[in-house]
Every structure is written in structure tokens, then in C-alpha cells.
Image 1 (cartoon, rainbow, N blue to C red):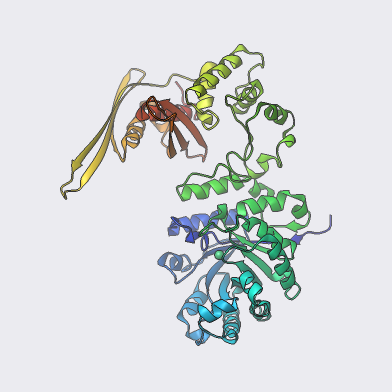
Image 2 (cartoon, rainbow, N blue to C red):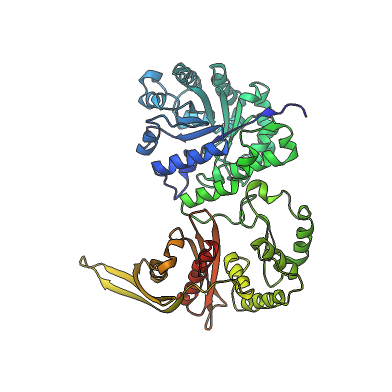
Length: 532
Ligand SMILES: [Zn+2]
């Protein structure tokens, strides 16, 4: 094979991704994410905008030891000022960073209306700023804001902005689709025209996802010659997000057209941790992972229909575009009322409960699943509850403890300041062997109080559940109206990073939640090998 060309990945989760609605990174979050990106093999980690807020300034106040090039973001000098007389630029140049990513206007309309200056002054600002950053010994990137819109409006000016930076010694000129409205065929044409004037190994692309094509636009740019892709983990970013590196990386590594041609900094071993990296970010953001995310989502390799499932077991490539293990994901055969024996058998094997395919208990398990799904249980979403059901039928769940009774109380009272205050309290009475344990807890709501009380004191089992955490709680009312039942799905995780989902169904939401909480605790005890 001919030697492959190097393609560079630039992550802006900590800068552009931090613009996401509802995302607020602490300094500790930022450092953790920077390490995560570094271990993944990203070439450039953009840490933020020093001077824009205290956290970003702190982030760049000291040297952060990374293999990746730590990059600080900021503006080119303001019109009518010299580079040394612009406090924003001076602060940026002092940031403890390997590289500096300067942003400049490249759309004549913005220069006129937003900047209220001339095209010549805009070009002078680019040259001066790049020169000043180079003089500080930094590698320089220029983000050409609104490049594609600017190029459509006035190609010569947009190109002149990019060229000014390149001629002044910027390592990279990054073409930004800032408003995210450019389409892949336009990106391919425009990047092709730019690469005729500036070598492609100095050209990058920064795409936003406003037409759901940020990933496609990034690849269009690479096809046209660009050799740096900017994006974020999980496509984080303002509005509809940035190009999703979690989708781009496996495509570059596993799809022949790109894998044969390009080399990236992400190793095969790091690729096999990709799903974990994606989920770790969601955990840091305290939000549920997207089940349907390409490559890394829980459903990315899930199959429901019976005939597909039996084919997949025989020959995975029949219904899978890549082997899920390559990206750290796993195949999932959904056990549901549509499924046949082959699903159940395959799922039992995956869990590690190998049974003979003619074992009558398999039929009993299938019947049980069908009966329970008919009244509202959803085992395809609740893998851990399915596993417990299967283990119980096969006689493999130890008897750990009994809940003798629980009591949940919700009380509203008026606080000393005259504000109504709702307090939930739960009391749980548990029997572990001969030992009776009573726990009381207050919570934000009744389910939270019950959860806290249940997990407060499990006697000799307590040490096995200290890492257990409830990460998501979803409630659905089935067949509404009178006689409606409630389905509760609870997602839990533990200190090893494993995640599992349990289900409870009842006419009473507390009771449904109790079932799901109990399954989660028992699952954790089984998983941890707690002795009876
Ligand atoms: Zn952006």
C-alpha cells in the first residue's frame, strides 16, 4: 500500500462545544475532557478563549501537559489598533498554549456591517495578528469566519483573507461554515477552489450542523483537499451542534475509501474506547447518552426482528456495517414479543448463561417475557431486568435480602420565609439474614427518597453497592385514562463505568419505581459477585 497522507483532527468541544445551551464546564470538567481527547489521539485540543471568562483564563494560566497541541482561541486585533495595543490579543498571546487559533472575518458583508471597517484594514489585521502570534513562537491557525457565505458573496475577498494568513506563515487556514447552512456539494466545490491557491495540507474545515450535514460537509472538504477536520465530541455545539468527531473518527479509520488514503492520530486501541469516551462526556454533562448515535449508541447494533437475529448470530456481517467491538460497542439482540428462540439463546449466551437450545426453560423464559411485555414491561430497553428474569428462571440469583416494608411520605409545609416547601421522606425496613435494618432518608421527590433509603444500609452488602449510581429515570404512562399503568425505566452505572437499565410496571408510580430500583440493586450485587 502506498504511504498514507496524514489527516489532522482538531477538537473544539471545550470552546465551540461550550457554547451549547445548558452546558457549563467547570475547570475540572475541562481538564478531564482535555485528558480524554488526548488519550484518544486528537492532534489539537482547543481549550477555550482566554480572557473571555475566568475558567478559560485559569485553564491557560499554567502549562497543561498534553501530547496534543493545546490551542487557545481568540480574535485578531481590532480595527484601528496595533497588535501590541489590543489587550485581548495581548492576553491571548500570553496564554500557556502550543498553538493559537485566531478568528477573523472573511465575509465582506460582516466586515462592513459588524466590524464597520474596510476590507484592507481587515486584511491588515489578519497579517498583523498572525505575525504577532508567530513572533511569540506559537503555531498559528486562522479560523475564517463565515468563509463559505463570504466566498459565495465575494470569492476574491474571502480568498484574500485566507491567503493573507497563509502567506504570513499560519500553519492552518480553517474554512468555517459558521451559520451551518452550506451543503456538501458547495463545500466540495469551494474547498477545491481554495486548495488550488493554498496547499490542502494547510487547509482545515469547521462545519456546523444546521442542515444535519456537518459530518458530510467535513468529508466533502477532505475529498476536495482539506487535511484538517475540526469538530466536537458527540457533536456538541451551539444551535444544532458542530461536526461530530465521534462519527468522523470511525469513518476515517474503518471505511476503505478513507482508511486506505489517510492516517490519523487515533490508534486502533483508542478507537476501541470510543464508545466509552462518548459516554464519559455525557456523564460529565449529566445527560443521557443518545441511544441512536451512529457507531457508539446503545441501539447502533441492535436488532429486533427474528429472522435478522438468527442471520446475525450465524454471520454478523449480514446486518452490520462494521464489527461493533472496533468502536467499543456491542451487538444487542432485542428480546421482545417479536423475537424468537434464537434471540433469547443468543442473549443468554452473551450474558454468559449458556443453556442447551432445547432446554424447556428457554420456552418458559420466552413465555414469561411475552406475558410480562403484554402488561407493559419493556425488556428490550431493560437489559439488566431481562438478565435477572433469565437468571431467576435458571435458578441463578442468590437470595440477598427482603424488603419487609416501605413507607413514602410527601409533605408540603410553609417554610419560615413563608415559601411552600415540599419534602419527601422514605422509611425502608430490610431483612438481611437475621438482621433487621431500618433506614430513613429525605429526597428531592418520593422516588429519590425511596432510592436513598433503600441504598442507605444493606448491612453486609453495603460495600458492594457504594459505587452504584442512578443516572437516568424515565416514566411512561401506558394506555392512558382509567386503569392506566406506569412504566419506569431506571438507568444505573457503577464505578467500573458499566451501565444497565431496569424496568418496573405498576398502576402505582412508586411501586413501579421500587421494582426498577430493586432490580438495579440486585443486578449490581450479582454483577459484583456478592456472596449470599
Ligand atoms: Zn463554530
